[in-house]
Amino acid sequence: MTKIYRLFAINPGSTSTKVALFEDDREIFSVNVTHDAARLKDFAEIADQLPYRRETILNELSKRGLSLDGTDAFIGRGGGLVGCDGGTYEINEALLHHARIGFSVKHPATLGSQLAAEFAATYGGRAFVVNPPDVDEMDEVARVCGLADAARESRGHPLNQKEVAIRYAASIGRRYEDLDLVVSHIGGGVSVTAHRKGRMADTTDVVNGDGPFAPTRAGSVPGAALIRMCFSGKFTQRQMMDYLTKNGGLVDHLGTAEVLEVKERIRAGDVYAKLVYDAMVYQIGKSIGAYAAVLHGQVDAILLTGGIARDAYLVEKVREMVGFIAPVVAMPGEFEMEAMASGARRVLTGEEQPKTYTGVPVWSGFRR
Image (cartoon, rainbow, N blue to C red; front, side, top):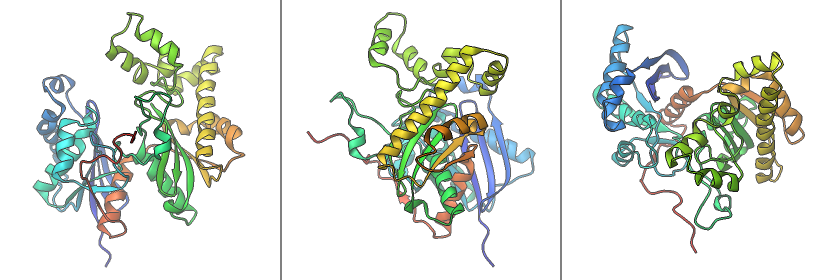
């Protein structure tokens, strides 16, 4: 009889932790566990939240009569790591050390690997992270920009993008590693990526201000205008970073990040709301065209994912712009929990070999 694997995925957010229990690829339970925001502020460092979050998760499971006994694998969201290849990583001490200190970023997602490791130590089973936010597979030529002291970085949505690419490949009887795809994640942030034979050869940087603007992010902004704002005396460095990554895009133009609200305003005749939303769609289409060029125009499909890919208007407008390149396929939603479970299952079944986190970045600068 074929073994059914029991998998527990953990995705920490700012004030909640989403957890889901799977049997193979079938989700049997999920919940977004809410944490007391005031209590979280009492912790000096993100890593200090670990015991409290673990306790809250276990209490929620206990209330629902669920136990983690017999779980084959615990999978954390990951983050805070050096740039690394895509794949499923067995959690080791090097990975945990970087997660604890938030080597690359200070974000609650770094607690995912720590929680997975603690649960595995308590209940048995193995601990993994799958395609963490730090995946960096960019071609070196894609890193070069017009300033010698700066470089383009890979900061996108590798977990969801790779999962939809794998699912699309399976749907047409092909392997992800055999396809050339342009994938756009369209949510609170928007990333556009050229996937060449299973590697993210070039991608927009959703953290540092690159690519299309999004509901909460400014995307690419003319450099001179940005410099003038930075030296205007109106903003601190922290405020400018928040402006680019949290309070830009639809929020800055329209005062909301909710696309449904924007669409309602458009239906009510708000001309400016329509212009801004159309501009976001336009920039997504334009970026897809640019990343198709990375693949020399040899694109098997263009995949649209993320929550906003549910908007039929957006999908159709993007299709009008780039459908001449390749079929445009909408795969709306976020598959992060499913992606974590699938990555672990592939390792447990021997379909994929786990990777070892070395703590050494895949890229550390140009040789001059």
